Amino acid sequence: MASGTRVPGPNYAQADAPRIAILYQETPRSYEVIGFIAVDTGAGVGQNRIDRAFRLEASKVGPDAALIEALPHNSGVSFVQGRAKAIKWKP
Image (cartoon, rainbow, N blue to C red; front, side):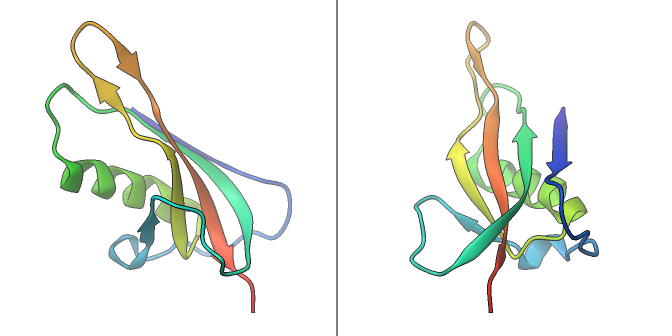
C-alpha cells in the first residue's frame, strides 16, 4: 500500500515517475516540500523496487525529487513504513 499527501499551496501536474530523483541525504540545493509519501513493501523486496514504489507514488504530486526519510522494512515479524518528502526545486 502506498499513499501521498499534498501540502497546502500550488498544485503541480503529475510528474514522469522515471525522472524523479531519489535522494537519501539532504541536498544543498534549495527546494520546497510539496507533499509527503508513504510506501509499504513485502518482505525481501530489492532496492530497485523500493525506489520504483517511491517514484510512482511521488509522481502523483508532481515533484522533481523524493527525499527519503525512512526506508520500508518488512521482515514478516516487524514492519516499518517507508516515508519521503516530495520536493520541487526552487529557481
